[in-house]
Image 1 (tube, rainbow, N blue to C red):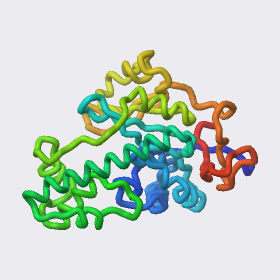
Image 2 (spheres, one colour; image 1 turned 90 degrees about the vertical axis):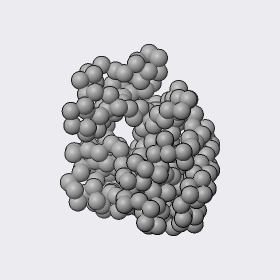
Image 3 (cartoon, helix red, strand yellow; image 1 turned 180 degrees about the horizontal axis):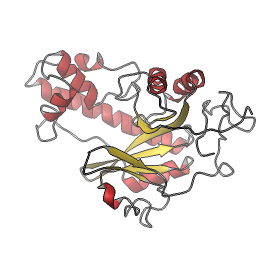
Length: 274
């Protein structure tokens, strides 16, 4: 059937493209996922949904299910709390305004960090921009790539372990809302937020306080990093799948065309929950 909804594995619920700090365009990422045998991939760029349309178009050709998402920056004092949001309306006015504010804060932070680094190392803001694709939000990974290109670090990992380490004296936080505001924004735009956290897998049998618990109503899951292997495990099933009856815009069909009841701005994606 043309409107059949599918969800196939293996699954990757957290992937970045060159829209934020990934190294591949959204379309290239989808094709790489297909080549690796991934059946379903979520595009969750930092504070941006601008890669959804091209990822969806590539998914229709590659036979991969794409879950539209985003990694929303939130903060508790100086601690960064990244929140994964899925299946929301990318044109929601409140969310669009807040993510624009976050991206602008990220850009100012990056410029300030480069200005500080340039006092001690031979690097310029132009070097950093050379590492970012047009329209991308410049972040620390782009600064890391510029440091590598200038011969100031062996690779990204070395850059983050050295010059870009938060204790190096060059680090600076950027604006981000508090986690509860993040949850409200994602729920208001169409629901299904997940905190990106690190916790032992042994503790993952019950919801994390402040996530699926009563202190953060509406958060549907979390991610964790196992203590034994260090591998990240995504657990986004503490809540129930979003209701198609209560959310707008409606999902698109598997053919890559918008459903008859969907909004024209809905990207051509295949929803995963049926």
